[in-house]
Image (cartoon, rainbow over all chains, first blue to last red):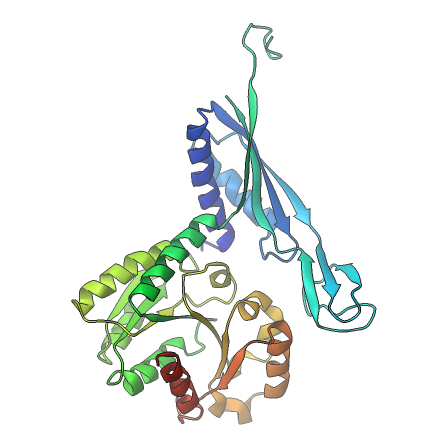
Length: 118
Length: 231
């Protein structure tokens, strides 16, 4: 079964190969990602998939995947307090119990940068 | 000097800033699909649910009800087999089976390919309404924008009332929520008001239908919803 983390890792490998060629790189040293707590990406699954798929391309096979996990933060639309929570389900404002919240961070799934040897 | 063997070769390391979404390739393909749907006047829905919620049955009934009013097309996503597309074709509606060969979701590149096959089957006839039936799975399909206008999430009564809170992303990213097999409500512990409330607290914009393809309950509202979007 190919879950979404595998599709994402396959897409990453294509993108990294393109970047390596564009920059005439000898190989890719590392790729830095930022993944939010509620993005729905399981970091261990993504690392596992990437480390398996990268071996097929010598430009990428020694690349290290470095992931910054972004916490889930909301701002309450009622009392304007901002807060961080661990659970991704049904957040309520811890100050006034409102469910009307604005997401400040936690849904990221970005490639930040790539380190190459040229 | 090289720090490995002391030779004259120096390592040159460069950092390339990217700052783009990991799903950018799919998003780009989704935009391309959406432009195609818009410029050809094709109203497109993407149906997401667990296996066995009644997606194909809903499409069979919708095909029976609307095929004389509108030109329909269906893209059927499955890991294996042509069974679902065959069920739709039996209703007289063109259907293309997309077998993902292992992936538990459709992506925009597959939809692009399927669209061209469907247009080939339609042989120049305009399409008004396109249904994409995603692979049965409430997790992964919610990550992949296919360029659809409306995303529909379905839950059947026998699956139980905890689906919205267990699979929040499917509900947060959908526009319509259909509760299917409502004729089975007397036999299951399924608090329909609680399910609706849970779904709406995840996504206050959700439009909710409660239907039974067996008795026909609620089907008229669903057909009218489609008709209103095609005006």
